[in-house]
Image 1 (tube, rainbow, N blue to C red):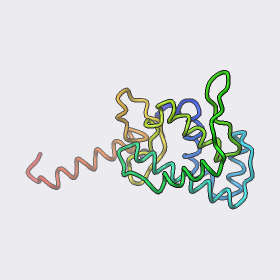
Image 2 (image 1 turned 90 degrees about the vertical axis):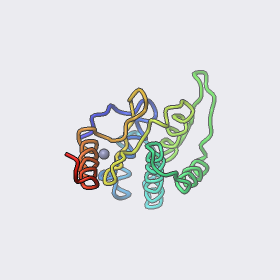
Image 3 (image 1 turned 120 degrees about the vertical axis):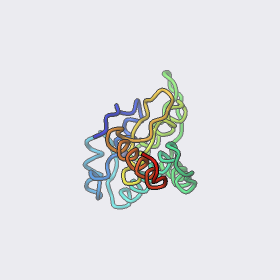
Length: 172
Ligand SMILES: [Zn+2]
């Protein structure tokens, strides 16, 4: 179980969307999730395919935020969807807004707002290969690597410990 508090502001929805691997497995599931989160929009098979591609592209960018490899293909996909959603800023009395329709536009609006606010680099995917769970890094020096230090973090430390013992048999 993740111990970390939720991501702040518009990143909260982005984080929740990234955590839907088991919740959204078809178009109907997407429709239910959108309704639960007050998001309008169609839940057609086409929207479902786009949403899943966007979800995994954002996961790649969050892995890159966590020291993972650069993800140029994910950037291309995200930029394409920003265009397809017609996402553009609007200046309101209380500052900048990203009016958007539907799931994809709202999620992307959250990503763009976080980039503008400087909080995006803290949005990460867990460094454990078999996990990639999305989490917001609240640590002061932005050093968080795992969704859960006692789960994925402890496993990684154990693996590193075993590797050290295997590569240096004389070590205690
Ligand atoms: Zn994890």
